[in-house]
Structure formats: structure tokens, C-alpha cells
Picture 1: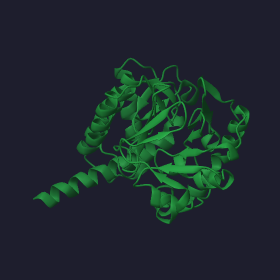
Picture 2: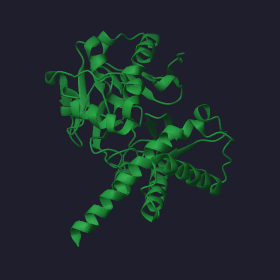
Picture 3: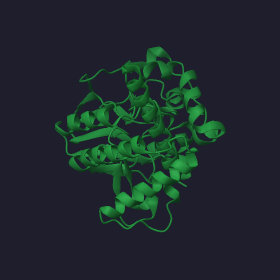
Picture 4: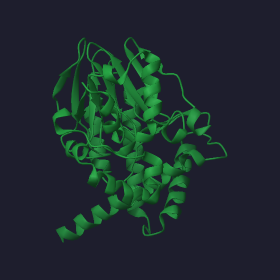
Length: 318
């Protein structure tokens, strides 16, 4: 199954990467400027969906000049090496803390394996290294001219330490990766409403850092956030929701009487919390929450890591 790319504005397209065979889950963004630029590759299992989406717009991998990954989690950058093999003239643009993992993905793969266990290959495929001389690092506030537009990169931790976001002044948009959370689309959940919620998957979630990132981004000159999961939302909505739910989730795990519960049980409690918060805001979730099951599991794991980090810091300060 494939989904036709969505034209968001002149020269800008959103490609559904069909993560794990599901539409409306993960997106890449294609900017057809003088330098053809792709934001996000998805994992290796999304490679064919990505190639199909590019072809639908009339772009071949060989036409790509820049491939940008917002951070090096496998659902965003796991397929970068595979694509770079076909995009011979392209340069991969990466956060300074992520570049080494693209050159040598061994630790990246081991970390993902600790989280996903024996399902890691099924979910993400394999990871192909990228030659160091094909990688361009962008620091905070550095830019990249691709023709009509000059992109600006912002260090954007909170979800991951190796995360940047990209300001597009022509589209008046921010390519946000996971920095401002996930938009749960109606088409993905089957429910009749949509909301934004931060991803707290292992291992770097920090609500205080997320707040600082969101407040900083809120001051930048753009109108629309383009989330990797999934699609556009207004700037103020995305920033405010990321802060709100980030605080809710952090308070929940810090107050939890038994955070050593098996992850499936914590994930069930986290889902109940999420449904309760949505109900407080006037939303009526449908009877099935199956589409949220993987995220709840990963978010529960990440929240436990966050609590362990807080407790370790407090212990060291005594």
C-alpha cells in the first residue's frame, strides 16, 4: 500500500513513509528548490515507500542534493545510508551529536536493540553506514542555502540530545522531527479528533529541556510545524501541547508508587492517563486504542529512564 504525496505549498511535498505498513504515521518532507532537499528518510523498511513518493513528484534519488535527518533515531534516520547509496551526489546533514552514529551505526543499533529487542530488524530493517566525507554537521543557528530559501538549524533537545529543527523562511514552517511531539491524526487512530503529545521514548526525554526548546521555538518566525509524526499543526498549538503533556507525563512518573512494574503494565496505566487527560479536555476517544499501543510502551520505558535519571541526580547531590 502507498499513499500519494501531499503538496503542502509551492515546491514543498509531504511523503507518507508507511512506517510498519501504516499510513499517517511517519512523513518525510521534500523541498524542490535549486538544491533538491529531503527532510527525514524514515527507517530502511520505509525505503520503498520513500522511493515511490519521490517518483510520484518526479524526483529520483540521484536528483537529491541534501538529505537532512532531524535526529538519528531509526524511524527518522535508519534508512539514510540506504538512500545515500542511491543518492550519489547528496550530502547528509546531521546534528553534531548524531554524525558519528551515521558513520558508525554500531552503538545506535545496540541501543535500539535494547529498546525493541528481537523485533528491531522487523521494525526498522538494517542500518547502512554513511561515509564521513558525505556528512555535513550543522550547529545551532547555522544555515544552509538551497536556492530560493536559506534554512536555519536550531538545536532542539528534550526528546533527544542529537535533535535539531529546521526553519524554512519561504514556507514559514519548522521541520520539527519529534521535538514538538506527535500529531495523532484521525486517520491513524480512527477517532474523530486530533491532538499533539510529546514522545517520551528512551532515553533522553526531559520535560524541563522540552519546555525550553518549545518556548525558544515559539519565538521564531514561522507559522506551521511540520511534524515527522505526522504532518502540520499551528505553531502555538504544537508548542503549548508539547509543554502541557510533557509536564503531565513527568509528574505522573515521578509520583508513581511502583515504577518498577513490568513495562506492559506501566504502558496500560499510561494509556489510561492519556485517555483521562483527553476526556478532561472534552475529547471522546473511540473504543479501540490499539494504534497507541507501541507508543505507550515506548513512552512508559522512556519515562522510567527519566525518573531514574532524576533519582540518580538527587542521590549524587546528597
